[in-house]
Length: 463
Ligand SMILES: Cc1cc2nc3c(=O)[nH]c(=O)nc-3n(C[C@H](O)[C@H](O)[C@H](O)COP(=O)(O)OP(=O)(O)OC[C@H]3O[C@@H](n4cnc5c(N)ncnc54)[C@H](O)[C@@H]3O)c2cc1C
Image (cartoon, rainbow, N blue to C red; front, side):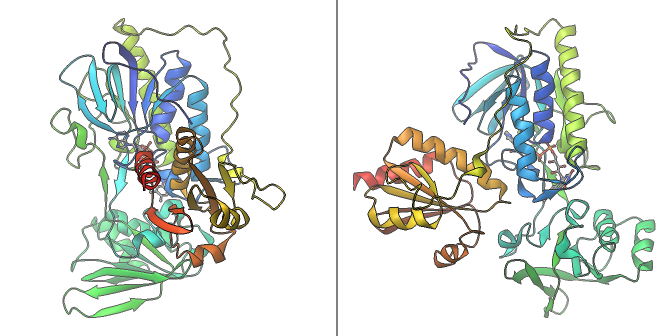
C-alpha cells in the first residue's frame, strides 16, 4: 500500500497528474524518469476507479507486449508499479477542485491541497450506461461498452448479439460484431439512425444485422453470463425477449471534465480541446492525455501514447520557463520492483490456518473464524477478473494495519468457493460482510472508502 506523500500548498510540485488510467500512469513513468518527481492523483470513485477503465475488463488482447493477452487489472498493476518504481508520488483520492485561475495551479481533494506548476489532466471518459436493473450483474459478463475490446470473447462466438444505439458508433460496432456473432440485433430508440449515410448503407446492406426501431432495453437476464434481454416497444408499449449472449452499449461517452468546465476550452462534445494530435490545452502548462481529450480512438494504447506526449511536452514547458526543480538520484537505477502479488494469496488449509492471522483465504479459514473468533470478521468475496477487487483489497489490508488486531479478514474467491458464495447470496464482487459472534451486521457491495469499514467496526466494538 502506498502511503500518501507529505505535500503542502506552501511548496509547488513540478507536475501533478490527475487520473490513473494508462494515460496518467504512462505520463508519470516519463515524468518520473525525467526526475520531475510527479504527483499522481489516482481518483477513487469520481469518474471511474483507480486504474481506469481497464480495471473493469477481463482480457486485454490488443495491448502490445502481451502475446497471450493480459487481464486488465494486471496490466494496470504493472504500469502502476513502473511509475512507482521511478518515484511517482501517489495520492489515492479524487481531485475535487482544480483552480486554473491562480499559478501555480491549485488541486484540492479530501485531505490534500497542492500546487502544481504543470498539470496533466488524464481523467478519462465514462461510457454512458442504460441503468437497467441487472446491468451491474452482467457487466463484463455479456454487457460491454466496447465491441472492439470485447467482441472476440469466446462467449460471443456464433451467438446472437445486440447493440444499443443509433449513431455511427452503434453502426460500426454492429458491423464489427458480425465477425463473431451469428446475428446482430441493432436496437434503435427512435425511428431512425443518426449515423452518416455511408454507415447506414453498410448496415442496411449487411444480412447479418437486423434493425429494430423504437425499442428500449429494460432488463437483462441469465445465470453466470447474459442469456437474454427484455425490450419495450416505445410505440406500442409491448415487451419482447431476445435471447442474446451479448449486449453492447454504443450510447456515447461522457468525458470527465466536470472539474474544469468554465476554466478551459472544451470541444462541442465536452472533451478537452487540443490541437489535433497534440497534448497542449488552451491554458499554458496544462496538458491533456487519454480519453478525456479523445472522442475518437479511445484505446489503452492510444491513451498511453498520449500520456507519453503530455509528459514530454510538460517537461519541455517546465524547463523552457525555468520552473522545473528536478530531483537528484543517488542511484541511477532504482531497485527492481517486487510486483504486487496480492492476488496470489494461498488458500488457507488445516495446516496453514492460524487463529490470529489478519488475512486468510478460503472456506476452511472462514468456517473456523466464524465459529471460534471473538473479533470482528470481514469476509470479502472476490473473483479473479474483478478489477474493483484489486482496489479494495489493499484498502482492507491498510485497515487491518490501522486497527491492529481488532478485526480479521477472510477472502472468498467465488469461483473457487461457489457454494459459500451461493449460501451468502453473493451476486457480485467485491462484496464485503461484517460479522461478529456469528451475527451478520453489515454488507457492502462494490468499492467503498476505508473509513466506512472502520467506522462500522468501531461502532461494533463500542456495543
Ligand atoms: C469494458 C471496457 C473494455 C475495454 N477493453 C479495452 C481493450 O481490450 N483494449 C484497449 O486498448 N482498450 C480497451 N478499453 C478502452 C480503454 O480502457 C480506454 O481507452 C483507456 O482506459 C483510456 O485511458 P485513460 O487513461 O485516458 O482513462 P481511464 O482509463 O478512463 O482512466 C481515467 C482515470 O481518471 C480518474 N479520474 C476521473 N476523475 C477523477 C478525479 N476527479 N480525480 C482524480 N482522478 C480522476 C479515474 O479514477 C481513472 O483512474 C476498454 C474500455 C472498457 C470500458
